[in-house]
Length: 312
Image 1: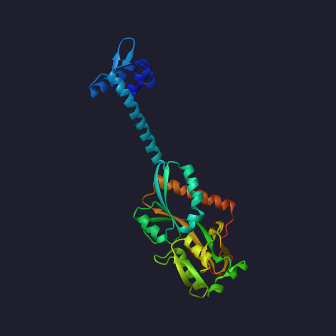
Image 2: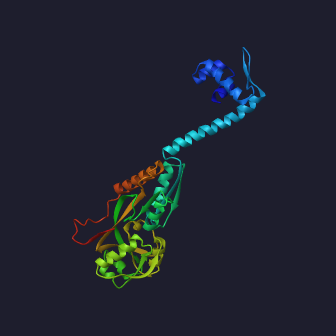
Image 3: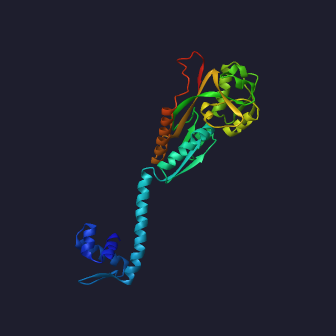
């Protein structure tokens, strides 16, 4: 078909053969083979010129479209093999939805404009783990621990946990807060069933401070938790990265004791690291590295501090 298009364009076998970088004899043989296969003559040949028959005119128009589609198919397969074409389903824990997702979505779209990113936000670690194992998610951005065989878990950063207070709360006058001083407060927590990582962080931290938290409400995502705290329904423990978000009605305060850190990780199936997944992982790593380079780590070190460190 490509040989025929060259002859039809050049109206000359010699020039067409030169254009195709082949000898004239095999070119003529290929055209005759094509005409035999179709069952009609496509070209009228004379000693001086080559012209298209009526059948050849009809074939030429449609063959051009077919070859364009074939070229598109070849290019699409090559882009897919490089991870530059397709659809990627990604899960996000609620805090990463606020802080990491906006920049990640823009950067990933710039790098991979032909990949559709299907985002599932406000998912707990257990929900993401189940979806990854079932093949409903390709990558999870979540809070460890991940208790599942067959998944690779890559920690991308650790950060301290802060106290979230309503602006009217009397403790906002303190620069730092000891968790033990909040023992009589109501707490707002991430969901307990299935247990979100931050729910377990809250319970472990309060236990370390010598009390059991009084949980007034549990919510499924950060947005609901922040809204309830802003409404002065209770206080909460949240990843310190949320401080980057402009939120009305709430105040962040560092937790002085105990020192509590939480991890953010990428999770994906070990047996299915496709080019699409690799491209996404590399983009996330690059973003995290760039943030670290311009913003000093705020994670306290338990080696330098005698206070208790709880790492989740």
